[in-house]
Length: 454
Ligand code: F0G
Image (cartoon, rainbow, N blue to C red):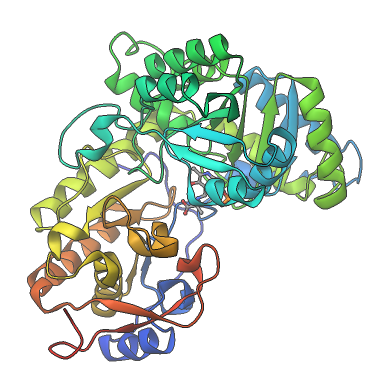
């Protein structure tokens, strides 16, 4: 059962299928353009959608809104130092702002970042400073249905090869995204972080974590990695941080709050340069674009997120949800992680080719039939400039502490209905301009069955 009880509630919007059909057309079949007032169950993202605890709301009242050196900053700094062990702590308002700062400071044009998987904003910020983001996922990452425990690992052999190869000199940073959101929310093992550590030390390259879901990664290490079963999530998280030179995080995830981010480093010089940029673009270094009350919510959230009962419930919910969806006929990526279940729309809708976005067809039909909002993680999101994503996935993300089991049962029923209609679904084509991170803004139109579908 949920290890919490509910103190504040919000009504859930209900619309008819006919209303949603019209809403979808008005939103140009882009789910990011649909208003939340028209969404019944919102599984678009686990980012910033967390239900905060009574202790977090209480802490927000203590927010010190002083411009410089507010006591709320000191509480935040202490919470991050205790968790990570990094001496240099920089608050910032969200993950991608941390990425922009870090990559501006650490990279020169033409350099390369190597990762188990760059999230879309991470890649965009690497490319923004004219550098190249190289994904080196382990071979198991490509097996959607195998039960391999650590599909989030970086391929250490390929990393080593890249570093001794002709482009080796250009590799400026190695990144481990924990858990790997773009690759199905799969965890990275401590053993893999250790292996990356040794390689990075040999070639004198900094190793950083994108720690946005550090607690979930720590919990999956405890349940899956030999020898880790008797440690607490906090101990394992610390072991992860101890192996790297620094991290950044979107705290809209495992910060258990509605906004926030951080950069935490060992190196004072790099931190000083980040703070210079932060001051120019985001705010004074002790608030980084956040309010004092946000820093209070985060300091408390960083305590709560490593609660073993909370993490066990979260992992169990994802595993149950994935199992129930699979039973309802939806192929899902195995094994389930914590923050989402990823559906394989390519397998469900083999008659829709990648260029017509099978994932988007599933997203739109789930919304049309049941008001469930999910997001495409396939060629629409990751195939900008004519590329094709390795898999046509749809992410059903789980906001933290928001939905109960019966809400998810409603989603499972809806998925059953969509699966029954799978053969009737048609693909989409993009109309109009395609800015970077196009999936947020592009307009789509459905292919007319029998006329322009392939
Ligand atoms: N890194 C990872 C692994 C992420 O998942 C995200 C955001 C970011 C960085 C950027 O952080 O949103 O605070 O600027 N992921 C969200 C998602 C948007 O829906 O998965 P941000």
